[in-house]
Image 1 (cartoon, rainbow, N blue to C red):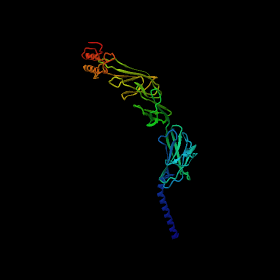
Image 2: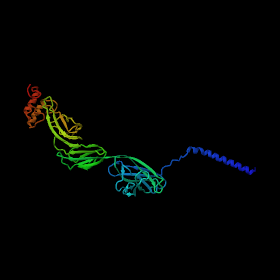
Image 3: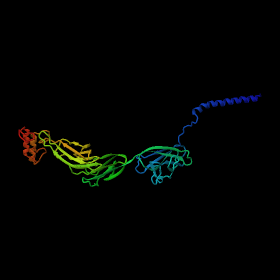
Length: 413
């Protein structure tokens, strides 16, 4: 073998050794990556489908597709496809009212076509170019046929490179609707026009029926003399809540508001116990009202004589609340039958206790004498029950204070 041939063989062995070493170095790397593994890459753009906070079945609802360009180059000629299927549908003229970037005057071309990835129609929007790092939004109207959860998807792709699409889906819940009605009447049931009914703080007139979203809604009234209650309804889908406010007058007992069906007083009365020098003269105000459902709010004027408290309530209905408003007793009652009985017992003062200090003594007799001299008739002074206050009453009180007359003032002792 020549020297030249020997040199070539040596060089070939060196080359083979170098290649083998290189392959041995690369082998662990290949094994670490694994067959079919691809390095993670960020999507060229981000897609979001957004529903309004009050998304519901009530009229047109504006959905938004938000597209953010994550690439270093502009996103040219984007196409936005949104499949439209039950419970969503497109209202009349929906393709003419698609707009971009929150500006209704910035309209975009749109058409209804067959969806490329779902069965049925899709709204296809021709988007505007999106610069690198920028975001564009596309807005369109839908109607929702039934309340509940639904999923809306969007597929965004370049017009001339449909393989570079990004798809996103969002689950959203559509609220249903109910009705809240309110009106204002006088005690004869005639409409009152100078009042303002508000639903959730928004004035809606003196007589109104409003479609509202399911959930809680508060109804109140202003523009009338006096303080009126407000009502909070938990409106169900398809539900109908109603309230009537009644303009107050000078009646001793009257409804000032009621929900659902009308309420009327069937009968009312006021009675008093006889009382004595050692037992109070109590006043009981009673009334019966008719009503089948809902609640009724009644106001009862306090007795004309002074009492020790605000009155004790008893009723065969459900007493929702009681309070004192401008000196009158306010009761909210839920009926349990066709008629509801209500009794208010007011504890008064002892007969002859005109200065209301819990004892009948000589100072009461002197006070009655002084008032009679002035032509006045103090409360709890008619101890002989003859319908007027005179010097005889003062004498009877003095006799009782001296232990010379019985507590009922009917005889001496």
